[in-house]
Length: 114
Length: 111
Image (cartoon, rainbow over all chains, first blue to last red; front, side):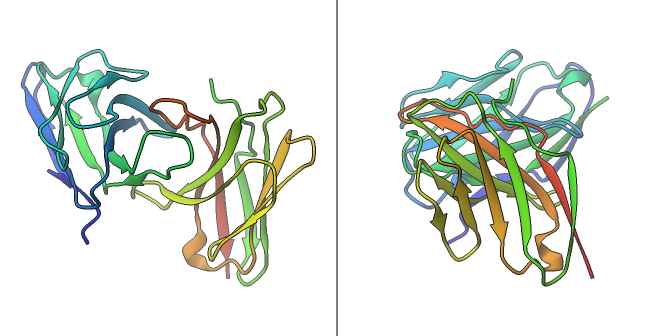
């Protein structure tokens, strides 16, 4: 099992460009999440999907959109990138969204917006 | 804001036990205590969680005080590969979505 995979690993964008970060999991999990981590900080939730067909905003959703394409895949889109979106983006999944299910994290995408 | 307080950094000698404290004085009765760690540049990794009782797994032990206002994560025989940032998180049963990560404790295991 690959667990949670993310593409790309690194990306540099210019201000105003758009891009989509891809995430896939092979653990048959129902719930998936997108977090961002700024230097020296903990992770903050952007969006999550409790189950296929549903998405909900997290703590910092502005400037992002998400798509739960199917049970395996959850993508994050930046429509018009800004320097404030320079960060490391982590995707995670869990069996269910309830508290006692551990979240499994991907390796991250390092995004720089110039 | 994170509901937990952790020291920003700790050192531990290789082979010794690492005891990482966490204060969560405002924890409510249905909130679990979770521990994750993040090894440099990688995604966070789940370690252990508990509600009231002490817990042990192959990675660590979690000791929760009787009043549940604090807890300690114990790595019984720390190795250099345990050098990481350790996050203590409290989360309500049935809550939706996020784990609230604070800044954690940077544990440095030294030879």
